[in-house]
Image (cartoon, rainbow, N blue to C red; front, side, top):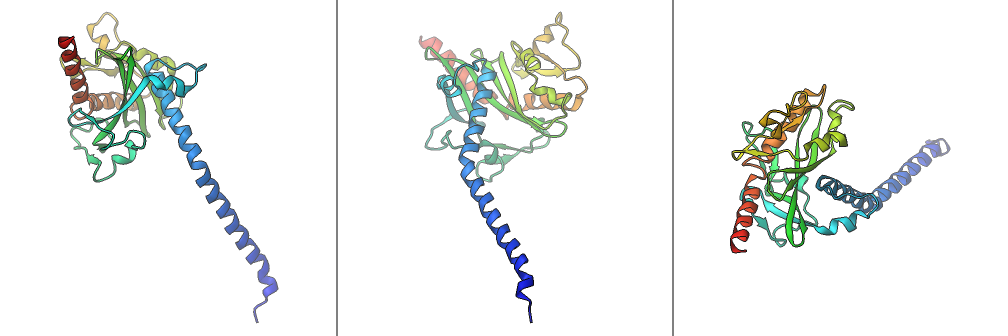
Length: 263
């Protein structure tokens, strides 16, 4: 005969485990909207920082009202209407790994080391007096230990860096982790992306020689973090090249020239 009394502690623990699991699951579901709101706030904050518009004394949502979020098709560089892809609920990271919204990248062109890319990308247009002041683009690439995520802001000339914000990575603190160092990020300001329509912007070992014309395309390398530095150079080469945002920037340039002619 089974001793029910002896089994009571087991059933009590089992019931308690189920109850705790239910509470944890409920809390996770309940907190999900708050977590997503915090992630969105952090993304907006980093976009503003890259654009040079962040002010800790002004609410982020208020500052972000001057930025227009759009979706583009990377292959053509053309804007996509909201009926096709709604920017408010488009998850760019997940899209890269789906069969309909993502595509594999051939190894010989994958300088960013990301294997797959999304067909559509979010872009952020900063307007001033109704005209494009700068554009902020999301980029990513493989470092030593992780995929590094950043926003790069480009001036209205579509070639000059306004700012950058690396906001997520798993690189070694004090070495590759210096990608998030604001003082290092400030050294990007004023650097040029293209030379003769080719991506020339890259990190160099040490500091650029200011007397050299090439210094305009060079960013201080990360001391003791050679692989991370190569990763940053690789992601720049990919995302500003033909398979990244170059078609989009060319579309903007063509529209800019058209507006100037008509104006």
